[in-house]
Image (cartoon, rainbow, N blue to C red; front, side, top):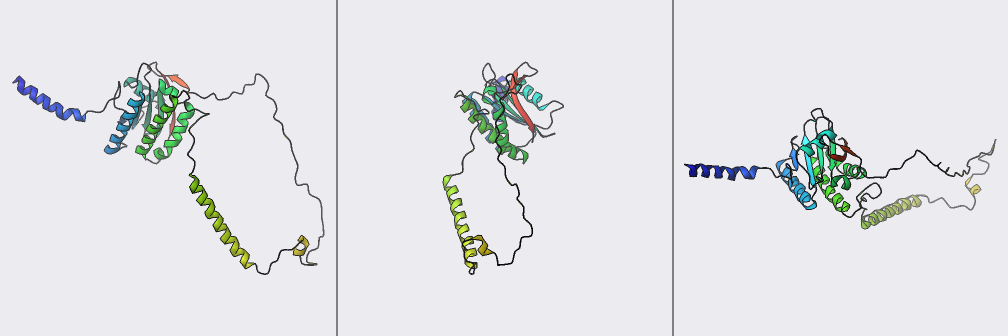
Amino acid sequence: MKKRIFTIFFALLIFIIPALPLFAADGGTRLIDAADLLSQSSERDLINKLDEISERQQVDIVVVTIESLEGESAMVYADDFYDYNGYGFGAGRDGILFLISMEERDWYISTTGYGITAFTDAGLEYMSEAFMGDLSEGNYAEAFTTFAELCDDFITQARTGTPYDADNLPKEPFEPVWTLVISLGAGFIISLIVTGGMRSSLKTVRSQLVADDYVKKNSMQLTKNRDLFLYRNVERQRKPEESGSDKSESTGGSSTHISSSGTKHGGGGGKF
């Protein structure tokens, strides 16, 4: 009897284990699509990407979609979700969480541990500009994929000792030289064709030596003339700033706050 029960229990495990979600280092799955924004294939692809980057970089990268914030702010919800679900590598609980709430179309990115170092305020703004177009248009799989790939790039850069920040954000890729050359060449050829056609239609016009030759004799008489002041030159010099000025400049880095669990977080968010 005991042997039969054990056999049945073992058989059930065979069917149940493959259906269990993939878990992060110390917490739950790195993708929680409670708002059901992704197809099954997109979920699979994104989980694989999040897991691969997280394990390789030793920084948890998490994406969460929900229907409602349930009365909380996006910042509080994202921080608490990260803290109370056990995410994060190492003693610093290194990681980053991307939250989407569909009720008011809120988004928020919460950073923790090394995530605060790797993702500065300026860096998070740069990232949001990269995925915001897809997010606003409902291309959620593309937006989350862009987010994950940027996380990989930003963490790699931070490992060099110089995280992406206000003074060294990634440069936009330049247009290939050959494309620029073709565009300029095409424009030049078109301009030659247009001006050549215009020139051929002006058969009776000949260039003259002085401006008066273009005016028909006695066809214009001046009845009044006066001098007009048209231009002036102005030189300006910057006034030296007084010592002790209240003016301050951005020093970059990440602004932080303490969550309800007592954990320090960085981050930022908005509407989409």
